[in-house]
Image (tube, rainbow, N blue to C red; front, side, top):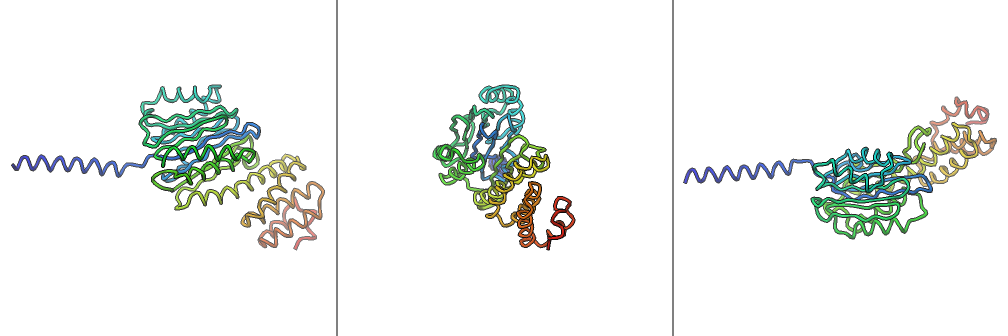
Length: 324
């Protein structure tokens, strides 16, 4: 009897240890995402959300002129850079997925969506992904998810993306993400989200391709926060367009973009003074001294600390005697 009791106790200990190990293991990035392309705008992007810390550090990958990849479930993060490289070599998204899966021993539990810059798309969900898992695709997009409230999540994402045609890609991605959440989203809850949009020379001073790159790593309301950040990111995108054009002396183009940034930033008070400051610089470069003076005066009114910069800024030298 003592031997039997000891044997039973050992079995309980082994099972308890196994369960504890499972509980201690890092969670899989079960999530819902959409990859998409806007060939006319030259943009590709990914939006993703999950009950998983910092999902934006794992799932989204994109490269201007090439495409976008979302790698999730029991994610193989090499699928991101390798998938983009395969697209760059001329493979279609479907061909790229097949190559990735052929060389991956864990492909049974992978999920991936890929879109090319031209709009070809594919989505794959391994049979080992946790239910509900699956995806939908069409020209220019692929939506997928696992551990979801049901197929209704990706159906809602697809419908929202298609209904928002004509809007900037980042806004369409957010619309799809928000619709997925409203349809039930990740069945475990909410935690993080990310949106990435790439366009050639879209980053600061045109040195990289990041038009929009925003993340919420941990929040009880990640969709509210990612929406707030998106409003700022859209201002920043116009601002980057304006400033890059200014540095390259394409002054009329710079002015159009910076005027747009200023109009957008009226709803972003935290960004408005600095946007107006650069608007003053760009208006002056376009020969509009009264407009430049009005912009810089308002910028200083909103952020008095800017006056020190303005007084020593060679780009505003023509206004020096008229500054506050």
